[in-house]
Length: 313
Image (cartoon, rainbow, N blue to C red; front, side, top):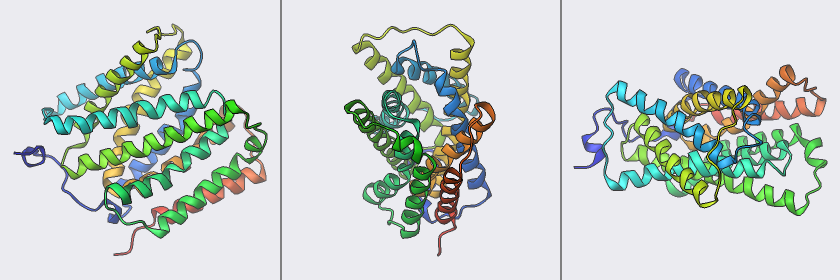
């Protein structure tokens, strides 16, 4: 008997890309956008003394512990076949590990604006990978909306991008961020495969975070990193926020959104949350909006309306 057959609360195999963007999807989407939008401030508190792999490791140790308490309290079934565990490991490595580490390292040498533009292209990457690996048709409207949004993010950060020198170090950082985006998109597809197998949401996240911890521990060990924690309020506060809000809450909402409306539309959150981040920066850091930045935000929001409009049946 398969995992899907024995799962009491598994979601049915459906076509998420055809589901309407209803009130539930709206709240999941808003949760993702605002959780990740505020995480850009918290991420700065992680940079410095502790190596990126180790910081991400601590993040998912804490997040994973919370997830296991959550599934335990709900009485979720947590025993699965070896094949299903391979999918869980794929989610852990691609969505919860490599994605973050590659962006941590890439962000050391490239402007944050260029990083945001690269990650915004996840909306296009999700669309293409969903067609290739999940059999979901490429929606022209979603593709056009994704390009409009990525253009908007480019306009939003254009002065910063134009000021970049594109030295070998910057190009290396850019390549790492591209790989990080591909890792994120691939993780979305593996999660979609688990949905097709009828595996419930919370076990997927709990096991994925568990495998991410194992992977990050081994990578850190092989690279000779010290397993340390920076003992100050800035580092510990940002760690708690990133673990509880940007990981437990945001990923529960995001993977739920993937299952509800499909990777192509859910991926547009990567276009919108940089706007939230800049809005937060306006209050916290005194960021000043220019006409060009406002135009970029308008493009991104317009693309959002195109992508999330309910599909025709």
